[in-house]
Image (cartoon, rainbow, N blue to C red; front, side):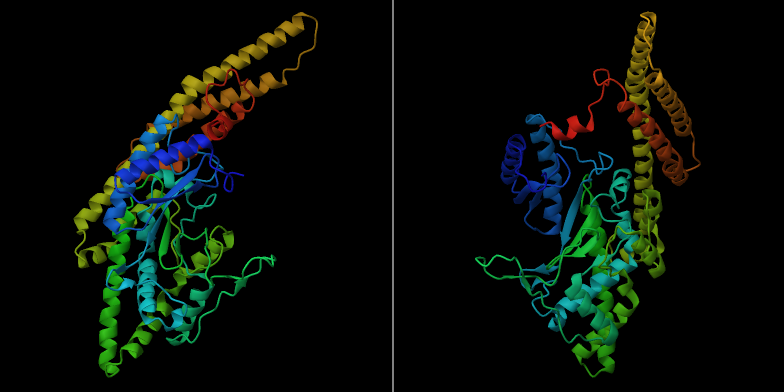
Length: 467
């Protein structure tokens, strides 16, 4: 009902004003529609060059927040504001090209014959496989850790989805260095005679893939909704540029031994790269436990948390490629990794302080008030000669005690002083975050019991469905 339904009138007015403000700033917003989660909506711009696209998406975030406030909404940019409900992210659609050469990632109808497409796509495959950890690090944050791998978000394991047609082409290339055919899409069988025959693309979309080929571009789907896209773009552009440079050097070396035959040299280099790096290609269900096991067999990284991922920013192979391309020095990369780690610790500690504050000043008083009401009601019934059950009262008192104990444990863990930033991050992810979940468990249970008139916080229903 949400995804395929009409946009509510009040929301539509907000979105239309946001689009108008974006147009005034030169931001080419093109798409508006409902998303899967309740009260979740999406906008998308027309493709632009990377620097301009980055500036425009930062401006768009500002516009959305300011216009939403005018319409009585709050525009939530958090990646996972509601447990068990689809989170939010940015899909960074990325390709290579220029007005002179066009899109270098355009496969055409016969991609097996398209040497340009094969060469540049192979360079991307190599880059993503070698630097999968870096790409995961560019989308790492306390908020995005909650989103990755849950409810329509891609997993923390970086892989490339090519679709059936291209996967078949690149498998042919891996085996022999050349491809002889491309799968055809066929037609859609709609079962309605009055409609024309509709051709079906041989490729497809895979919503479980973090880095999927979609038509004539790659879609990096793991970026968080609150992120700047600058980090992912800098990393992606740098590693692909380095991979292209590697291929050029290898092709030139091969041509010396193949009497200047470019196609033969390209086939040889493509085969060499795919035999080494095709492990990163996966067309299946990224959510499945089977994929986690298969990825481990392939030697792919599964960096589940931000403290696991961020060290990849200053890893030796990251430093090597960034210095070779003249983008960032080792010192600059190490400083960024340190700053991002510190930011993670601050985020978790701030959230844990808010959990404690809300728990002690909002939820506990409500639970105690309700417990008092239940006790007074039970006493009144008993004094009137009636029989009163104490089951509800016992549940509320027990959960209130659980909540208070969980808050005490959380405050104690937050007071821990780590030896350095990395130790603090590890403590945050292994100790503080689990303690916050224990608090939430007791609070959620109380929310299901305490009188709605006494409960001080808005419910999921009120937050998501009242418009």
